[in-house]
Length: 269
Ligand code: NAD
Image (cartoon, rainbow, N blue to C red; front, side, top):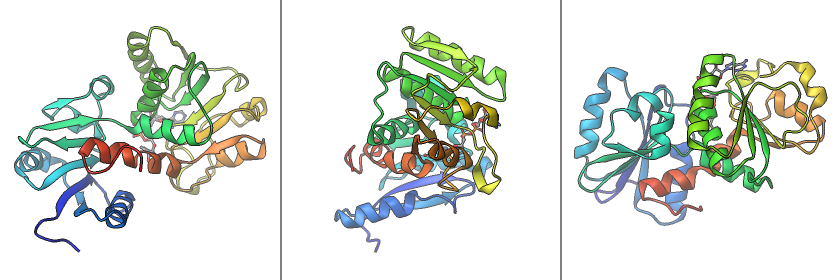
């Protein structure tokens, strides 16, 4: 039930019907007796500037989660963004300050790390491979470097994207060995699919199938794809005895980071 005194948060994207944040947040608000609610907002790109102006003046709105396709386009239009959001050129959450200023951050990588931690993975000193150097892959790579991996290999269908991300990470994290490409999966303690490959039951893998022979049971294999929950990569990893991390686990593990940035939940839910 919404009341006149209910404070709001929102999630903005287009389309929006597929997102799970409204039910996750609204369930938490209700279970914890909070007079707060999350609205899903599907908005056209040509209305974004007017939307941002409205947000600045919207006094009972605390913040907005940002999803596809607006993470990059909104990063350059806010009043301030965190260091990582500036480096990544993308935001997935906005806080509205009491004075109306809009501040942005990107906590996709923090959600990934929280889920990995729950799966027993500690990044410090580890070797990781991230396939996919797009929005979410870049955020995961940034957080892995910040958490102290010793080396990080990047792979993407677009070499230019890999090189751009590698340059960014080398500049920000001099102590981490950043490589482009890989010959074998042996030796990685973490393998991440951060591409959309495997989504929607196509049966596709984000890497050549022959590489799976070199995958060791000690590697944690993670996927960002949320549907299906068990992607072909995760199914193959499980068959080889690996621990796995699903896309929904990552999404769920960042609710506290999103809520905390907007000022409506604690960091740990
Ligand atoms: P994006 O388009 O920014 O990046 C995708 C990258 O994958 C691109 O760089 C592309 O070149 C690369 N790629 C595509 N096919 C490839 C292949 N076969 N081999 C190597 N590289 C390939 O997209 P994004 O915003 O990073 O989103 C990626 C996926 O992550 C989407 O499916 C999205 O739904 C999901 N996602 C999940 C979560 C979560 O919490 N689980 C959060 C954000 C995004």
